Image 1 (spheres, rainbow, N blue to C red):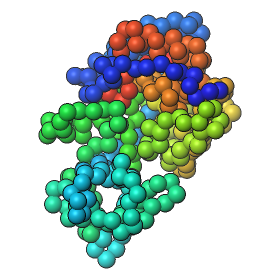
Image 2 (image 1 turned 60 degrees about the horizontal axis):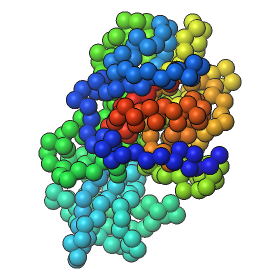
Image 3 (image 1 turned 180 degrees about the vertical axis):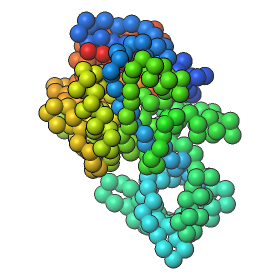
Length: 354
């Protein structure tokens, strides 16, 4: 299959630059695969659109503030450090794996001035993936505290604002995070989960619909566009996951009682499809997945899917197409465009039903 299968433009006016006033007031496009029907709702309608005994599986990874706007030593030119993870340290210094934004041809040993009085960071060496090992001259507890205080949330590149004042910084720290986030490690939010509220969970429970969690730490590769002509040529990124015995047992119990597994987000879907057996039961454990789901694909665990609207040239839209079919996915996206749904991370949602 060609990577330009979904070659349509999203008008800039429909790319959400901030979240809805309330999480569960986002719009919800419902697509019924078997009937080929599309209908329009709001997210708080979700409990009534599902059936008793259904089970939701959600990704409880937590997004860490990790964008630091720095200045190059000597020139004062702007450079952004995007901290991916802490590597360790010692001797009063802490090492991180990081990306450097648009700065090209950086020499080993280059230094940047950190914002908010953080001193300097030294870029030690770059690996084959283009990631730097950098050193902050402060011990790990102090470095972690500094990064949490000074760094901004890692919003995707299509969110462009004229200013980032304190109001927006606080908004993003709260809303570019699910209400059930628990395990630190992501540099991008599992966006389908952003619409859930305590009220939605309460309504689901009242209808006899349960939920379980898994963890997949979303990495920067989730924003990597498809550049190869065919999907088979695309080098899929790797992300780390963890599935608990409780989640495995919950899925098995739901299936035994005739319930469907409603998977919330493409990240949860990748994880479950990686670890599930032929009977659709996930095996508990931790690991890393490089699974790229695209048509044709036989799903083992995913009976329904909650997802946001994705970039046309992304791996994520092809996962949706593997579940809905290419033609119905195209119809759904064109319908969303016609009805002016809000797209991408802070945008509206879609429920894909059998």
